[in-house]
Amino acid sequence: MPFIPQSQGQRRAERVRLEEAIPAVVRFPDGNRTSGRLKVVSMTGGLLCVPKPVRQGTVGKVMFLTPSGAVLGSAEMLSPLSWELQAFRFVSLPTEDHDRLEVTIKLYLKKTKDDHQDAQRGQGQIEKLRPW
Image (cartoon, rainbow, N blue to C red):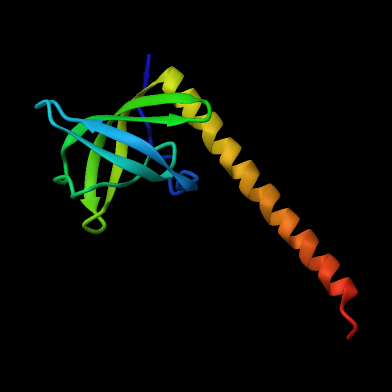
């Protein structure tokens, strides 16, 4: 059964800025497609780096690979942020793809939190060793 992302009141979905850009493809109903790289992702949409902007309101199938597996969902292209950056929102996401995306986002959030804690620990050790 497809999952249709819903806004949850005033709270925004957690966004994950990807360290490495993940290859992505958008297929449109007219048969055209565009390739790009996924830069930011959330449970409700994301940000693609594309060769040229896609017209706002265009709906297509977005496909990309995550550490948890492939994600394929219908997405509406939002207003481009620049000549290269295209925002999108998921219109429909099958349950399995939703679950894979959720696991991936949690993985990236945990890694970011762990990296931040390691950096703080390292900074604390440096402060202890300072002569002043």
